[in-house]
Image 1 (cartoon, helix red, strand yellow):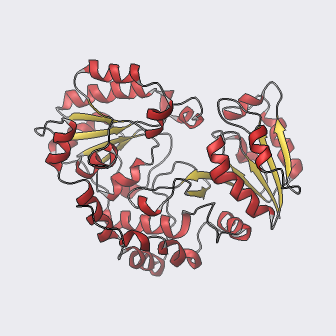
Image 2 (image 1 turned 90 degrees about the vertical axis):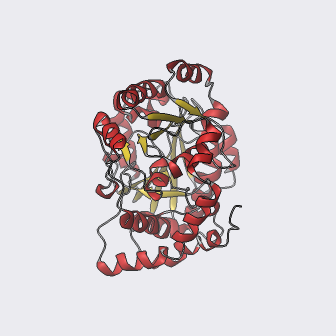
Image 3 (image 1 turned 120 degrees about the horizontal axis):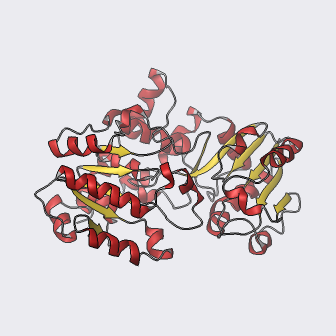
Length: 394
């Protein structure tokens, strides 16, 4: 078995928490090659990363450091040359951390993307380095057609944990009036939440946003539609933006608009996004993982994306129609039976921790080559046992 790790947009954190552990495990059972660019915009592999893996003598490293290496993050300057190189390697499996989804389509063997898995609402048992392998990134709610027996099995697996999850957030996020008072949101109109995505130079996945709209442009677009419909827009920011991005200009812009309300601080110890979605009337999405917590809380959603959403999410794609439906109280909510089943499938079948001490290289390869394996479902859902033991927040 020959495995290629293709890593154009790996950040130092991702390498330490996700990629290095995977490489170490897979190298125990397969011939491993790593193809990555030199550092640029906090992505790529440099001396610190290579020093971490200096003991892996059997791993083959290919670091692209010519003048065109930055292009690997978007559209490679020589895609055919890259494709020919990978074809020469002839990997059986390629594991990608790439924001260029077109070039890897031409690689031989099986190609899987390493993507962040959903954490909230089962956050206490889902570390930040939870990932899953996928053939198609950003397909919200992706789930295969299941037999009646497998569907019933998933329903039974999630059933003990769902009430505990709901009870936890009902206590943690308190009641609607308390959350709105804490943030300063008037309670006389429906509230739609706009969770902003990470807007840093290292996030090359934003290139797939329709028209490559900036967060400021998205706020302006949403604010105009909300005002026309008589709906309150609540804007929340990505936690990494508050850590690594200068937000003064954006926050000033939101304040100057007058209508939207910026919720940039936790509410009763809960992230503003989660607290608002627990009580909100709608949510505006691009490719944020916030779709999952919105689905878990039954929030009607609008999605503007190049990528599909599962039909049972009932994601609206017409912004004006969506706001009108929210205002009238007629916006379609997700199918909650399907929501629960998807969370069961995601936790049982997909999500895993690269740093799990029980994870082996054979298990990593099996996950990549066999996207659906009921044999791993009990072990996957067993991680949620700790959630059921959480002390309810007073």
